[in-house]
Image 1: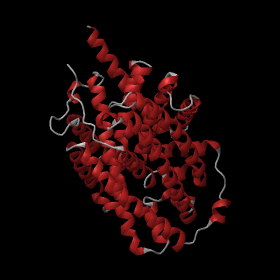
Image 2 (image 1 turned 90 degrees about the vertical axis):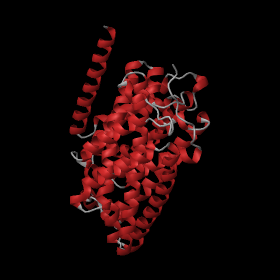
Image 3 (image 1 turned 60 degrees about the vertical axis):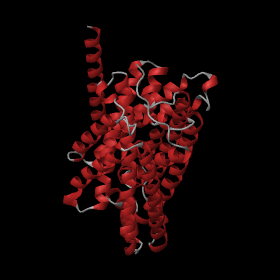
Image 4 (image 1 turned 30 degrees about the vertical axis):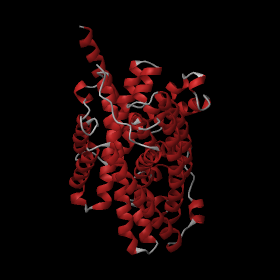
Length: 415
């Protein structure tokens, strides 16, 4: 029997905005502080490295999504190009890594939106509310994302203008800061890679995009290019206004930039923008994790119960409810910076497999040079190796659990 299919309702603009909403929210308001703690002003070099690796990964994802326009992203690509186990490792890494990202985005929203004692309950409320939006259908997700991205870009513009015109930028002082070593720069790149992974949302929703072979590659590259430009402007502003040391310890860097600039009236504007950015990323992340869960459940790599598609709303409703429950538990128990490092580990493994999968595509399916996949794979391995040791150890542990689960399921099936 044929699996129930999702409806193709997204156009190019919708797909770009969903990817951009994921990336802008994830990076601008949460990743620069830990990157500054790792490398100081060297985070700008780290940002460039992360962007280059992300571009290689984006070309791999775009090329594969054009050939396999179904839900599941690299989980599907790995199975088709490399074998079932490779696909499972990609899907497992995506689900656990992006579930941690969901927790990070919910906590980022709460950090900007409400006082300390209320932050975790507010984060859970955000998860539940956005899961409800996704439950109602992908077009509602796209409409809300359009509004959120507009609010975020306006708030970022206010913050940058406030910092550069109202503050006292210290470029000379920034140059005088001791240069970080290669390891510190690469560690910042690994943490900042967390910010670039939003384009994966477009590929994981390949079953819901109109004319996917044309739309998905264009949407992925466009969303990434816009995000890189935004990150570069914001990163320079944060460093010259706050300085590396203050940025490294800031819990709300862009709010601090506005305050330094003397635009007290704009602090609530930036807080609203930060909250909206985190919500936009969370909205797209829940949708992406739900659809990868759907793809894995269809092939029994997760319990088949999650493969249900709602008869009216045409979404993987059981998978999305399960994602919301798990994320809510994480929100109540994890620290934001731990979630970012752990997420980067899972996502880098995911894109390593995407690059390996794209490398095997025949010439008639290729849209980009094969050497980009080689560079992307090496970059992913390098960034994984330089992540903080707790992130690497926890990532390896979670992968061990996933491998044991699938091995046990296959053993039972053979009997």
